Image (tube, rainbow, N blue to C red; front, side, top):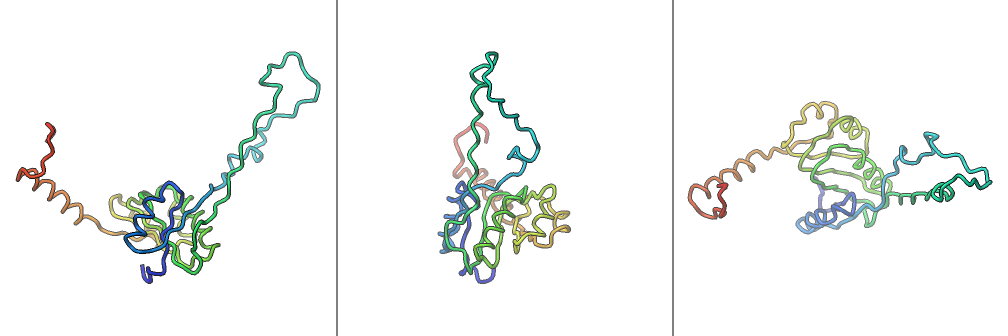
Length: 194
């Protein structure tokens, strides 16, 4: 990522804050976190007309106590907001996997609205199923960087923003070291499975 010193690592939700902080510490960058939830149209109940009609105001002796009291209305989800400064900076979202890209696209739009001028997504595994490539292509995301742990050549044809990092040599070296330790008898775990 060119000019990465002007970047901020973004946790797309508080659950990945530890991972984002780990990257930020290693790269000596700032951290931002997205707080809130994306509004889902299908959850509101107003759009599909499945609301119960109001009671007519007359108590009915045949109603149970459950039916006499109105149902509790679910709390409204807080909107997506940025905690941290992303204005005039490069935003880098990090996660283990990107499959359904809707949450990444929603966060990217919020980051763009808060002044981020480039937005990168870095994920170890790029599943990119269904319409994820099309969503990414039309989003404000600059580039999606994934490894080749999952084949995604077809997805790359639909979205030119997807870049692949080959990690086969890293995996080969890890396997070689594990096998070398087993053969030489060093650091062999004490279990019957080996």
